[in-house]
Image 1 (cartoon, rainbow, N blue to C red):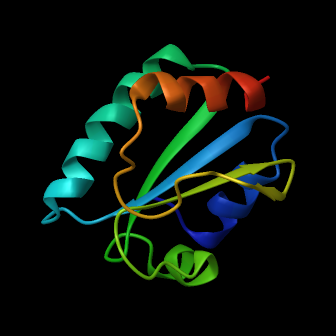
Image 2 (spheres, rainbow, N blue to C red):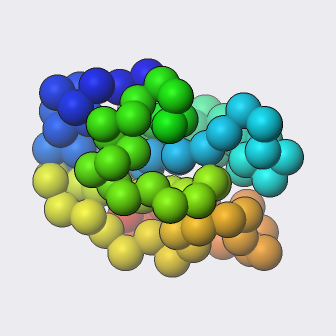
Length: 106
């Protein structure tokens, strides 16, 4: 989905960006992708949701130091934000994701 130039351009924006590193063959990744698709609709224009895989964006995965999938990374204005559920599918409700996004999405 993204080369390094695109990645750096998006993370430098004033708007929140969430990066999901996943795998097509991962069942947990599929569950999280579905959740992020719904959230991307709700936060359209306020947050950028980006999906990458090791196959589609290996350089971006290297920069993010993706170890296992799924993994999520959050940025705004070039700064990494403290996303509370970085690896795996969190045992958190979608409402908890929304609460975090409400605090960080402008």
